[in-house]
Image (cartoon, rainbow, N blue to C red; front, side, top):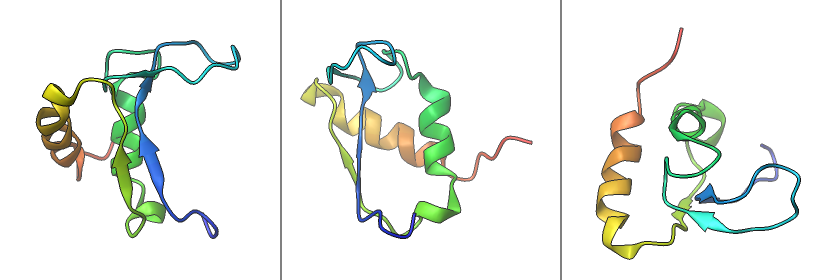
Length: 76
């Protein structure tokens, strides 16, 4: 994390390894919501800017609220 200066957040329409970058709304792709919950609770990225990069701008407010609601929900 030493050299990470920002992250773009989006789910993906494609499976791992297909060498395509097709964005999807959070929780509607192959990553799923658990991946974003892990990101939102990783103390190593607390000070790193997160940029929402999903495909449906009508969902942006909902997705931002969802991400914020995930903070503090650490899995045991």
